[in-house]
Length: 320
Image (tube, rainbow, N blue to C red; front, side):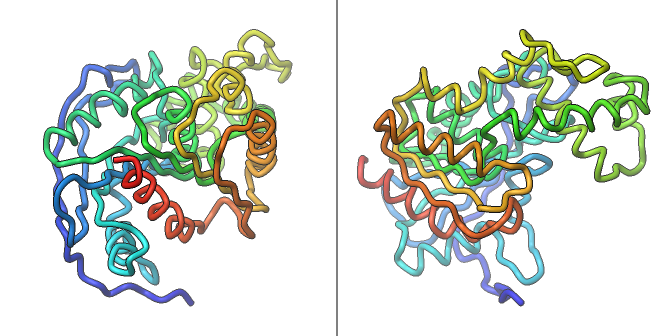
């Protein structure tokens, strides 16, 4: 079994909260959010700052929690710095959870302007508190998507790393529409399903899957599904979703910072196919990027952070 880390945290852990009008939303979520910051030992002067973006149903500071036969993200951070593969850094773990279960880190009337919050509010708040040499993003799944898309849309990131980030929406989300319709029909439609989620004492596995699609509908469109009751796609509404697929975005957003992309070759959500296509298209467009397809699924891939965290920190340090 994997070794458990008993190593004490020897650096600095700080926790604070701040509010932002960018997070005003239609689902009743708070605009004040907590942020956990870990600073590894041994650093002085301006330090690289890496912001961790959580996957769906996750949040940043949960990564500092103890887990059996594992290590926390701060423990991993300190181990990597101590080994000499990355410079002392500032690691930021914000609370980005929503009552729809997750966040794609783009601006949304329904969920909130999370893209603007990241590139404006969070960076400004961190810069006011710490001596930062540059900012990078890293995340897995929805967080990996956020890192990749923010790298496409913003000019403020020194490096981004996408682990198994959402890509290839037809195989990732389109294929889920039939099962989503089946689930919400039990509750009289999407509104009834969301009321059930708010009031039930326990969510089932299928509920989380359906909630994920509801979250995507509220992020990429008006909160309704892009299909009718017979699962026939509404081309106009589906095109709203597809406009946010990195496979399409890359055509108009080709100027990325140094970019790391990897994915497991047996991803349960078919993301390897979308990211393979993105990798091929980026090669055709001569967009530099690091690429690796590794043996694995969508789960249990935290070990990939051993590669991306040093890579991001060194990229930031090389341009600062």
